Image (cartoon, rainbow, N blue to C red; front, side):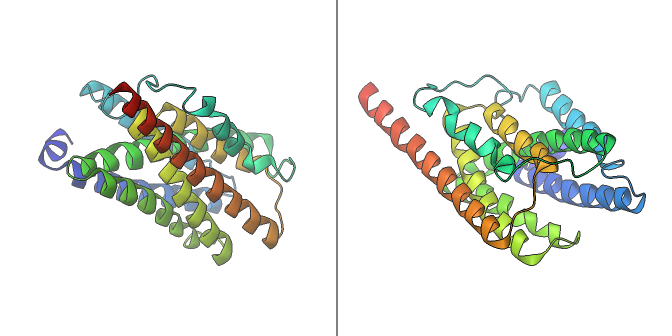
Length: 242
């Protein structure tokens, strides 16, 4: 892996994306065939997250990929209050138990690991590989790739409209997370937010089609608006420093 990484960070990131999509799609399919949600996915998630975490730490890449404390001015980031709002989105329509206690536990564990993996792969590996030559291009590609990647849910039986809505707000969230990482130098706020959003989905109450469209629109507005606020405030801070 080290040789591939040194040869091309971009291809290293792309191969991780492919491996992640294939591995987790297969794990989810096996879990469903066994009739126990995430029974295969959970251990696969934990192993994958630990493997990538150890690899990054072993090669002293923690700072580069944001596995460090946040360095920005929290006041400039509105003390992350918008992130708290985004984290709670899956509870806006109520709370319920969609699965057994054991399945819920495995689901939450899987989703926490997925939040870590997706942030480190898309915001860390992919973004950093591209931004060496073009930061704006890296922001766009990291955001769009993350959003479009959710189209794989169609292969796992998801409905078309919810998947399209997910692609839209995932792209917006991807943009926000990329900006937070780019400006704050830390992936931790993104990892925590992403993991909690995913985890709380197991307790969400299904809404109507209209409700889902409103929620998707709200997530897009909050995410893009917050990202633009950060860019504006960071720009002012730098100007004042000069």
